[in-house]
Length: 262
Ligand SMILES: [Zn+2]
Image (cartoon, rainbow, N blue to C red; front, side, top):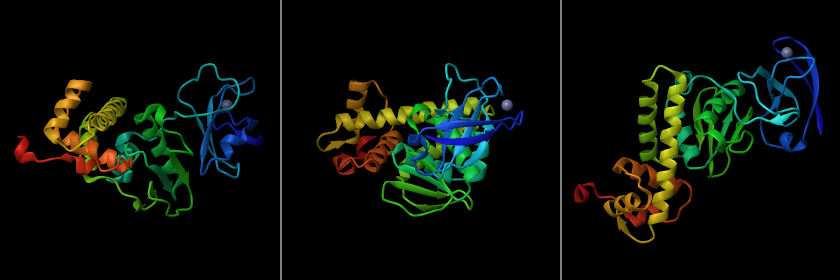
């Protein structure tokens, strides 16, 4: 256990809380939830780095239920999706694609942007993402392994990693559609539904393909076995997702031939 000193940004009261080593042993910056108590009735999210230094404290915009001690927090609000797109440009599309391919996303340099991005991405992927594990927010940028997608949030630019082009094209289109809606909540929910469906589609494709098949056969089988109506664009994106996840030969097994099929 490590003690951290937290000052509430609302009432300025200082609390000292113990956090478990499990949280602080994670790479980069992690977040913990500090519930309201007798001294300060604000629920706070505290971002701590791997040296147990408090990097940022913010009031939580919802009241967590049932929490009494310090717990690791998995859902915080970040920038609006529109704001994030403005800041990150096409990189936002690549980041969402990388997460669909289950790559580790490293957001380095500008910690504020990284934390905000985590907030929005975490809401799109709901319970699936963990700060310090799936998404790492760090100051120093270092190029990592093949399963990692590294973004310099200051510039912003991609430093390493790659994602499938059919997948990014589709995610880009989803983002355009979602951002046509002015309401941020609705945009987030739409992206959540679309990415969730794409994830399910990829799983369905993986389940039905065992030998060489045409795209039409795959789509038929996915429909009969999983009741999922795949478009050709979605099938191509699903193949990128599976390829990115390391499903061997998936691209060789499915023959996508637009002319023969349609
Ligand atoms: Zn307070």
